Length: 146
Image (cartoon, rainbow, N blue to C red; front, top):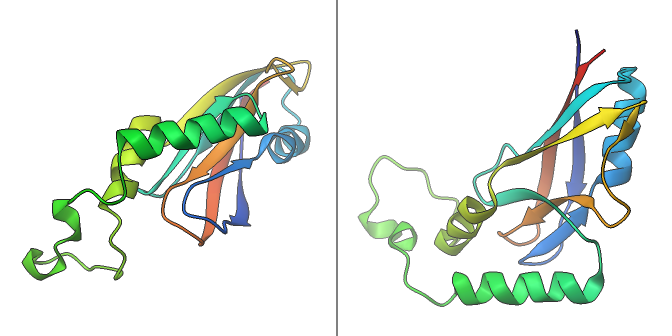
């Protein structure tokens, strides 16, 4: 069985942002030489998630509205009480809400590969979802199979 991994690097520009990675994931599948297997897209960040869904602008607005309602930015989060935290390095961002949103989506998604192509439907895309504002980010793509 072959294993192939590569990072996708990108920058986000807004508080919550859906970044479509589908074409870049397919490029990595192509580079791997795997014809049959699966791909894993993993976010090595605690304030970002990965999901598969439809890349339709109005639907993405609905997702963002839902996330803001479920986990409001203006709520009080214990994580943001920097003066009470000990032995934890803070980056100065009040981002408790970002961690809570990320736990809802999860850090990774898998998809099957057949004949060297992602087996996503025409309306499915891989997204990295930013919850912590403009930042440099990356995801790890791991391809496994024959």
